[in-house]
Image 1 (cartoon, helix red, strand yellow):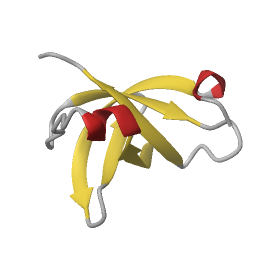
Image 2 (cartoon, helix red, strand yellow):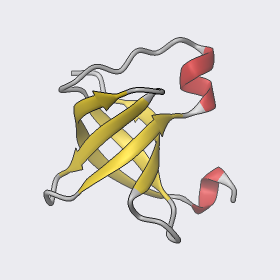
Image 3 (spheres, one colour):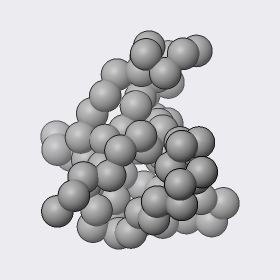
Image 4 (tube, helix red, strand yellow):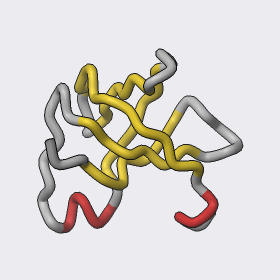
Length: 73
Protein backbone atom coordinates (compact mmCIF):
# COMPACT_ATOMS: atom_id res chain seq x y z
CA UNK A 1 0.00 0.00 0.00
CA UNK A 2 1.33 3.41 -0.93
CA UNK A 3 1.77 6.20 1.58
CA UNK A 4 -0.82 8.26 -0.35
CA UNK A 5 -3.54 5.70 0.49
CA UNK A 6 -3.26 6.28 4.24
CA UNK A 7 -5.85 8.35 6.12
CA UNK A 8 -4.12 11.07 8.17
CA UNK A 9 -5.31 11.65 11.74
CA UNK A 10 -3.98 13.81 14.57
CA UNK A 11 -3.20 12.43 18.01
CA UNK A 12 -1.00 12.53 21.09
CA UNK A 13 1.56 9.91 22.12
CA UNK A 14 0.47 8.50 25.48
CA UNK A 15 2.79 5.53 25.95
CA UNK A 16 5.85 3.83 24.47
CA UNK A 17 6.27 0.08 24.11
CA UNK A 18 9.20 -2.10 23.18
CA UNK A 19 10.33 -2.47 19.60
CA UNK A 20 9.64 1.13 18.63
CA UNK A 21 5.87 0.91 19.08
CA UNK A 22 4.01 3.97 20.36
CA UNK A 23 0.47 4.14 21.74
CA UNK A 24 -1.32 7.16 20.24
CA UNK A 25 -4.62 8.56 21.49
CA UNK A 26 -6.59 10.41 18.84
CA UNK A 27 -8.69 13.49 19.55
CA UNK A 28 -11.90 11.45 19.71
CA UNK A 29 -10.47 9.15 22.41
CA UNK A 30 -9.64 6.11 20.26
CA UNK A 31 -6.21 4.57 20.88
CA UNK A 32 -4.02 2.86 18.30
CA UNK A 33 -0.49 1.52 18.07
CA UNK A 34 1.93 3.17 15.66
CA UNK A 35 5.53 2.89 14.51
CA UNK A 36 7.85 5.54 13.10
CA UNK A 37 8.02 5.99 9.35
CA UNK A 38 11.26 5.32 7.49
CA UNK A 39 12.11 9.00 6.96
CA UNK A 40 11.68 9.74 10.66
CA UNK A 41 14.08 6.91 11.46
CA UNK A 42 16.50 8.05 8.76
CA UNK A 43 16.73 11.62 10.06
CA UNK A 44 16.69 10.43 13.71
CA UNK A 45 13.59 12.38 14.74
CA UNK A 46 12.75 11.53 18.33
CA UNK A 47 9.18 11.14 19.55
CA UNK A 48 8.42 11.38 23.26
CA UNK A 49 5.32 10.87 25.39
CA UNK A 50 3.11 13.95 25.11
CA UNK A 51 4.14 14.89 21.55
CA UNK A 52 1.41 15.71 19.05
CA UNK A 53 1.81 13.58 15.93
CA UNK A 54 0.19 12.92 12.58
CA UNK A 55 -0.51 9.24 12.03
CA UNK A 56 -1.21 7.55 8.72
CA UNK A 57 -3.85 4.87 9.28
CA UNK A 58 -4.64 2.09 6.82
CA UNK A 59 -8.30 1.79 5.81
CA UNK A 60 -7.98 -2.01 6.17
CA UNK A 61 -6.73 -2.06 9.78
CA UNK A 62 -7.56 1.12 11.75
CA UNK A 63 -5.88 -0.17 14.96
CA UNK A 64 -2.33 0.20 13.57
CA UNK A 65 -0.66 3.24 12.09
CA UNK A 66 2.53 4.90 10.94
CA UNK A 67 3.78 8.13 12.56
CA UNK A 68 4.62 10.39 9.63
CA UNK A 69 5.00 13.81 11.26
CA UNK A 70 5.74 15.26 14.70
CA UNK A 71 4.19 18.66 15.41
CA UNK A 72 6.37 21.52 16.62
CA UNK A 73 4.92 22.60 19.95
